[in-house]
Image 1 (tube, rainbow, N blue to C red):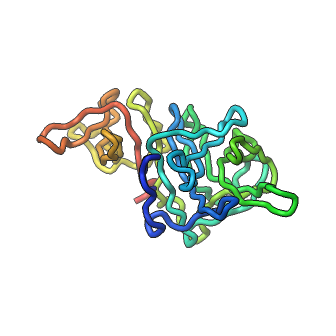
Image 2 (image 1 turned 90 degrees about the horizontal axis):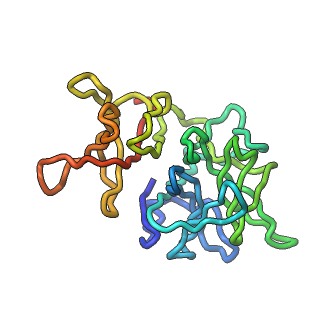
Image 3 (image 1 turned 135 degrees about the vertical axis):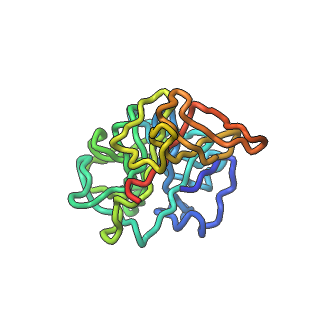
Length: 246
């Protein structure tokens, strides 16, 4: 993931990988993820639409959201990722989908989708969006609205040659939340009392800083070394990154 702001200039393609689709005018479209409320939502990123390049399909209605602020672009790698056809909100059988985010309750996982949208009688476009079991299909932001598609769309999956247990995942949490121990993977270390420690990243003044997550210290479980002195900054908002297997 490459973290950006809607006011940022998009970095070169060598850092973000190839686009997953093109817009009606041939402009590149990328996969992204953005925080909204307590959810972390897959989105499409269209640089030509700056300063509002991020488009998110609303889960409850057919409105296209245009959030401002921090978002992330997924580095799309054709060697390790591929699109696999499915329907009805199901993940492709025997495949591991690339986890993109989650809903407000953290438990409802969301994934990247790609669907064919009819834009004229003789033309279709492939447009990215989100999918999940609770959606019964995929939702595609397009033309200031949301298309709901339940049949014959694609889900981004890890290639068969990739071990999904060694892929980097992320969970967006708040220090007031109980840590979902089944999903965060093994700790990277232990505190003096034997309590587990995890790796994290947290936004401070527009920057994204590595941090230590100590769940036993909740609601002040995020610890960041201060760049100006030898003290720890203690924060409440966090994003946990983890390796399921090392």
